[in-house]
Amino acid sequence: MTRQLLVAEFLRAQAAWRLARADGDPVRAARCAAALLDAAAYAAGLTDDDRTLALLASGGCFRGQVFDPGPRGISIARWWQYRDTPQAGPQDLVTALATAAAGARS
Image (tube, rainbow, N blue to C red; front, side, top):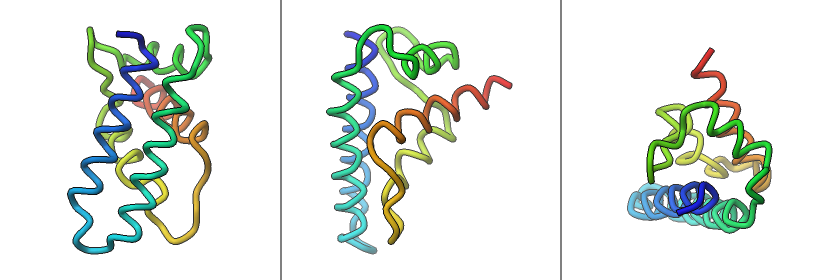
């Protein structure tokens, strides 16, 4: 499986996680899940030489056939677009995950 698909799989799993916890605020949960699914589609379309994939790799996020952005990255994904004010697009989420991974290595 490619790195792009590993990131996309992670984001789809986070969307499912968010929807499973929609009890408190289903509108926010749906908005977050939709943004995560959009980001998953974006990640699946990245090229092999994409800079953010390289940053995620150098941050240690790929372990075999698993993408794990660490606790900070998981938190970023789970709360992406959950607030009332939209935060940004799919590229911004993947970049935020890469930035968090790079920060964890520092």
